[in-house]
Image (tube, rainbow, N blue to C red; front, side):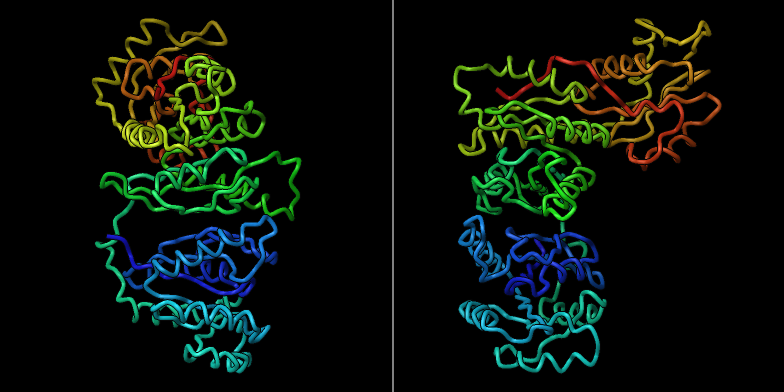
Length: 476
């Protein structure tokens, strides 16, 4: 069951994105003095006293978008209003009542929706008098808040819950899977997500950099609930400045990768893969995320290349993701996009697999019989046992007599061989080489929660797997 929706509506720069972050207590929407930063609908699940609702941020109504996306932004605002159970109409106490507030009020009166008037930027009790002018908008007494000074949050949440009734924790289904879609600008990320959602959930445009924020889109696919994260297109850092909106978007794309269960690296079949794609691939591998290398715009390739030829090319460009399956798709024509969604669930299941002790031991014995650990010196390296200490990513501890003697090359060899001998063939594996004096339980306590993001211990491989041009499964 989906939680009720609450939409934040208002003219530009009244603090709509700040209100979303304020109520959710997380930095979700980009907050910037530049008018028109928010274009898409940005959502977050908010909990208050054990009840839940979805809060939706929208673009500023009444602004003329410099990239000629004004109508698309307004369409997203109208869609948010139509789907909402409650509207938060935000105004600015500092600037007072302006003509565009009246325009927004007229828009909202055209919908049969309950509306709460929210007077933002009331930074002190003395500023409460500034809200008096807004009574004329016809939505009753304003609720005064200050996102900057952390004033009025509980009062507003109580008022929202009184109107909605809210949902209990049991009523709000957790998604089975979170997928982050990343890639350079104009690769087709938003088009792909709209194809999955079956509606224009995010704005699609030929203008590079249309998506500026990370947008969570909730989708029900064949009765399975998932969240797909649309991210801002990435470009070379050398072309960005600290004041550039895309500077913030780049870091939020990285955060989306970290919080996702699986990542789709979307490539443009009509362009060569370059520095941006490679840096994204390196970051995905560093985070040990199951990955699909999705080659979009395949309908434009024609006879210039076959999937097998492109797979060989991709294998050379992204050796660190040699385990990842490749999919040739056309998001615009909805070709193979549903197949890729089924593949995503399959990979998530792989990454959640816990091998039995017998399966793991048999695989390790076979690998060692084929080739034992190599050492930088003449000292022998003895393997005592292996144990799996975690999933997502599958994390394996290899217990040996002298971890420092095991070479990086052998660690990579071991991971490749382990993939071939187990059901973990298409997901990243984290290998930890430890002294047999340290118990597996202690290793689990110190390592499993980090997923490769914290400081690595001595002897930690980082789970690298680098066999370029490797054979990869694909959707034909």
